Length: 127
Figure 1 (spheres, helix red, strand yellow):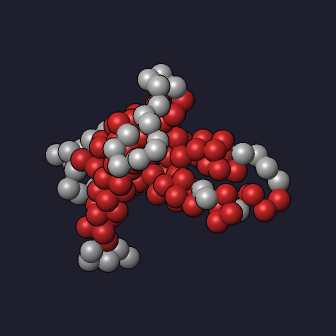
Figure 2: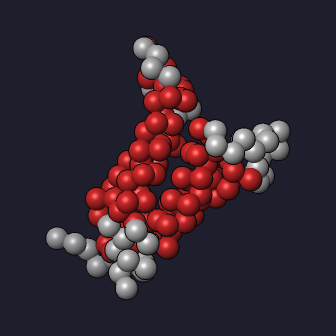
């Protein structure tokens, strides 16, 4: 049985996750607050990933085309975890705590949950 605040809690999860993801994308694409890490070249894999984070995060934040945006963000984080954190290594490097992939794994499943749930309240999709 749904609780009294379930929809509001989900909306807050969607909004905060979208904001944090978009901010991380802005860090990658524009080099904001990323001293020592210059922005990637336009058209590179890292640039495309950053653009998906920035635009997808904003779409999830405002709740517009939420299912598609969240699904794309989830897939991007799955690729990030597999390719950049796990790197298909056997043994201990499979563990997110050791390969520093906790955020990628968590974002992957949060966005998968949002994609399956939809935008919910406080969203453009709802209007």
